[in-house]
Amino acid sequence: MIIDKDKVMIDVKGVSKTYKLYENPIDRLKESIHPFKKKYHKEFHALKDISFQVKMGDTLGIIGRNGSGKSTLLKLITGILQPTSGTISVNGKIAALLELGAGFNLELTGIENIYLYGTIMGLSKQEIDKKLDEIIEFADIGDFIFQPVKMYSSGMFARLAFSVAINVDPDILIVDETLSVGDAYFTAKCMEKIREWVNSRTVIFVSHSLEVVRSFCNKGILLDQGRIHTAGDIQMVTETYERLINQQIVTSKLKSIAELAAKPKLEKKDMRHNQISKELSEDPEFTRRVSQFRSGTGHARFIRAEALVDSKPTHIIPFGEEVVFRLVAEYYSDIDTEGTVGYMVRNRNGQDVFGMNIFNLNRLLPPIKKGTILEVEFTFKNILAPGSYSVSLGLKPKPIEPIFLDCVNVAIFFEVPPLEGQNYVPGLLYVPNELTYNIVNLNIKESVASV
Image (cartoon, rainbow, N blue to C red; front, top):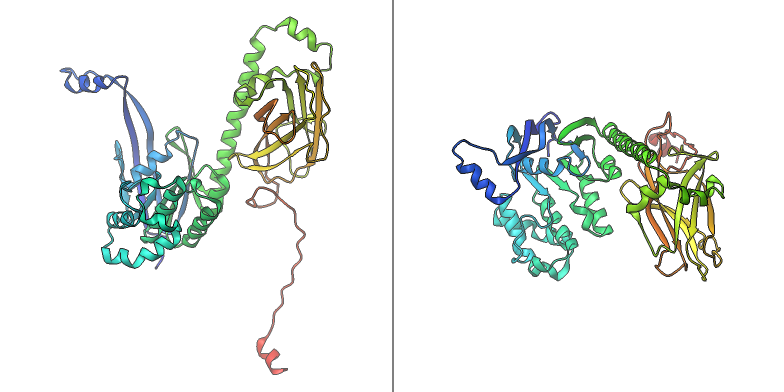
């Protein structure tokens, strides 16, 4: 395939998409027949004045929070929806994986759906016949290929849909989080296939995983509230997104603290904590913030959790620093068994990075009486890659059984800033390496002559 880097494959000019929202179905009829054209709807602007181009060989990552307009934009590009204003020009055949099983007839078998999808994509029966074995082999769903797709699991849907999409030789492939439902092996196989296409076809990739977007894409668009917030180099776009999210987290945190400070204090409750040090007392802001993220029996609860660097609480943890996760819990009932306490660090996408509990360190909590304050400190050296992270906490009465006295899914959040003077290395951890290399210039003719 001849690659023309200047050829525009997708041209989006001034596109907006507005939905009419009606409180009642009858309002739509009222509006259509009202003699004075009275409006019974409210307008929701899903996209506002979007313009960009995608050229041949580009791999474009579209990112943004839920509700920012990503899926709407993809549906406009593929022609599923029509823009309220503006124009979209597409130069080439599109294969899109927008919704699981989209374009499939649930009553037809996998084989029959291959022919159906291929026909929709403009292939003749003879062309599909040539590709059939390759599609079946890549999907790798066994004899289910001969069964109605209504019997398929979500993973089988994803396997067949992706296999068909990539084997109909599209000029443009659009993927919208569909691969997240597949198993790890199939996802890796799909990603490797996409890698083969980089620089030879046009790919639009929508994902909440910034690591995946950075890995595959050379350009990016950040959507925020229906508008293009940032567009350009993928590294710059993803870093802007991370800063935007962090700013919103900090703003929300400061607002919560201000609201909490404005509330009257409960003197009786505070008197109990005056008898112990501030470091071991309940942090009201922590309790309020984690209320929506916690579960458990409630016989004991975390009342404070913080990340410390140089003995000071922080939300910014530079690479290489010694970090202390300091956890404080209060027991409201007697616990007669030997328990455990621990944490798990997760990246922005909720992926487990690493964790620890005292059971893994060959320790257990002794039986604990009601009213006891437990303080635990875990210390480690930070080798996390730049990015944003959250920490979940668990306090259990027994180490093996899945019963929690308290479980807080988002207890601590922190950011690891980029290292100055070093390029970004994608991954979960950043492991410094010593570099030694030699350049050897071998003259093959002289080597042969000397033999």
